[in-house]
Image: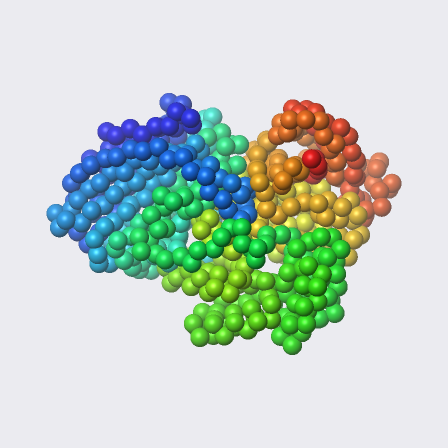
Length: 604
């Protein structure tokens, strides 16, 4: 039995390689948060660890600071106890099983030496498999998303042993006083993304790959299998996936010989920001140059950084529109279907042309696949875009796994059921609250928030506006029309000030499906957002993130008696803006509407 612990987080990992099906367990403050769980990998020289002999163990302390261009924070302190266990097969091939115990979780991976190819079959594990899994305690309850290729499903509450089927990563679980978020980090073209798979009456969640073959060339390192562990605030505020990928100890990324074009996170062409976007409110508008110029003007007036020309843009109009936008300090993104960029020659031609036009970035859509081939496409287009200094938004995409930690021009991913679905059956408000502590924890999320005018919207105006803070995305596409925002001056006022890239993030309070209160700092200014699901209520939020008195401006839903006095839309969309001094640690009590929310601005 090997024990790896970290006093700073009270997390302990126990490993027994003699029982691969029950090899790894995790405790927090002496309580079991992950029961003995399976590890294992098939290699050209037999299964690990059964067919390998233990050689050596090394334990070090890692303390590194890494910088990213955007995200929930831009400076990350990666502190970990790192244990590496070296094994050797009969044929002389080495495998290093690497475990990290960090301040906010546990991650492990397999580093395979030698040469040759490892074949992993998602649908035929008898021919080769990654047997990684985590076992939850029997009392665990969870919040999961049923798997679909576009990762667009609603977050729902489950009892862990009643869940059955495949679920998109990540999955959140509570057991007693402890919280666990299961996910993965570092998926690229050397591997494939996994979904969390389980069967009813079991609390074992395995990392199941797509039902296609994966060929990974040795030497290699598999993706990280990751469990964020702590109280809910610790888990929801974590940025561990980016830390695992960005640290110097990452051994050249998930693949041992994987080459990545280096991009400085401080490069002046990598510009996170707010995006004016016409497609959500008018799908025919991207091809209308006059409409797009009005959106450029609106973005410039608000101080927003970019506009997006979505599907249907007119190539004859783009060069002049880009020039028009740049004269007003507004960047331009173009939409593209991924198949238009899949053939190498066509990709080179199109990206060269768009770069010559002066375009700042590309939104690539409809990949909708987790297999190795699609991840190889991601690798290729990330490299090609970096060569031309183009930012990227991956829509119809995988769930992020930290790669923007080494490719900072990858600004955001969809991989979420977002505001595009408001126009159909709508989305339950509980879904938004679950996203804040699940999907958005592992990386940027192109939900396209702040949609006031959808007929089937179930949330209040305060809830919608608060999503601009609660949800993080390196490109924050505000979904609604410029007219919708101009007609709500209190919302417009807040959106002129809110940021898209953050220096610090704190999860203040909440519960999955009920409430999420998040505070984020940009430079010296703090912003806080709260969203709720359920009846109208009073929400108390302790403002513990600053150390001196500040002037707080709250934007919230108007009460019934206030609605007529507020020239900010109809009753359902009325917002009130009010200011008051607040002291550090003071509790702010705010009345919210049904499925409501509010925002707070605390300038330095």
